[in-house]
Length: 268
Length: 335
Image (cartoon, rainbow over all chains, first blue to last red; front, side):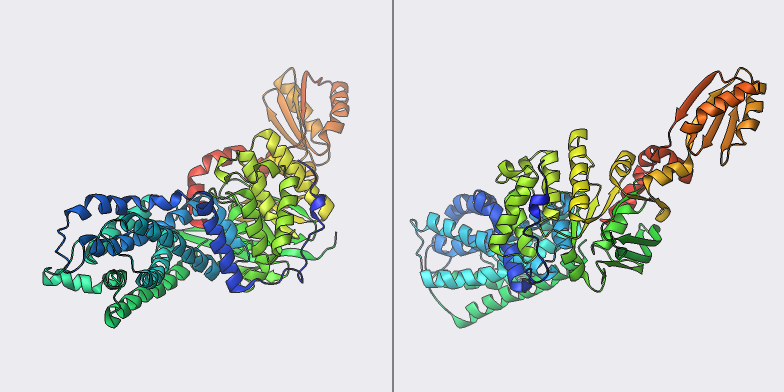
């Protein structure tokens, strides 16, 4: 190893190293999170395996007329995109869990980065894989009986971005609580994710559901997100449906970020 | 070296509660480290070394007592403390899915350095730690030694005045361990960086530290230079005699040596005395003149292990093995 004395010239004094502030810190954390994905783009596919299986093996079973007007695919794809967003964002805590176990999370906690930047930067990063996955799914289905409505899709992506940030933050909170017990993280993640998906009517419409089931479905924020996505992806903009979708996603974002921040503050 | 303390703790205490049991990990620790010192925190696993370091680096809050690093309180001025210190924990500073160079740049940015300054600094450190050609590889593919060097490099990004190293050489092969120790000593000598490192390697504390703070069960039990700790204990002169009677007579004479502790076992006499290596030849001649000729002799210079044994009644090596289970509990609670 060569000498370290060469490292003196760029020594930062207090004046040169101004406090970067929350936005710069958040950006730093987000870029750091995105780097491995940009270098290894295949990792984006991991969260897509299950949704693509459903798309290929489940959607052909849907009768073309069951969702009123429009093709079965038109009805099914927005749900599958929501499913992909939920899968990806809910698994993201596993990356943090790995960093907790190997030590890099501890290094970040001792750095001057604020706890809020550490959480928000990580959560915002979830938007990027979500968008990439949505683009891939749309590219796959558009040649079939699916009509692409760009404006609706963009608005839908905004709703999903909020939703993904919230779910991602919750996943980080779970990772911090689980610490080095992967089984706890995965058990909870897997146990929660399927009821949330099914109760939101992602795979089948809940129109004829018994009262208790539709009651639970009404409590599920994803229900409103999925309904808004279906409307928007079909190129229609009903104010109440879209509004409730935004509200549902925003609620998940606010709850997720506050729970996540609380967890990040206790993280050591 | 100025006498201004850059690390100061007052009655620092940390208590963990686990499975309804209270563990006193650190008990009323008072410690002052002056600017430019290189201090080794020595003790068996579970002694409270890491817990103390985690309090000093703002990772966990003390149960009671206070600590200041670079003049800032570790509870009320966390951000100032974090900006001032460099920290190399027990784990890897770099994320395993990341590239080394990216982690260095991100850490420099976190410390408020400009984009260009961050890049330059990253390249300097990669070169200084012989990592330039591995800079673009995923951290998970680096060897243990390369990863550890990267950890230290990340800790040094902002050229901290105070550096904390938590068991820096654990898991390294002897070659890498020596290299790392040399880097640490150079950092202290050439840049005047204050360094506090924890270790359970006696050789390491002995080889590199100006000052050794021995900690056991959460309290400081000795605090001095390695040389003085060892000379305080004295060398061990073991003598063998022709008979039990001769040994008993010799023991009486040997006790006249100032500060000597003498122990008789059958026809053997063990004399623990400061500068025993210098006194041994004279002692042998004296005993021969007194009619109790020495038949066998062995002189062992004091080691830090002997110092530890003397202070705690246990060997440090044994302690490290036997306390493994309790350690898992306390350190687990600390994590």
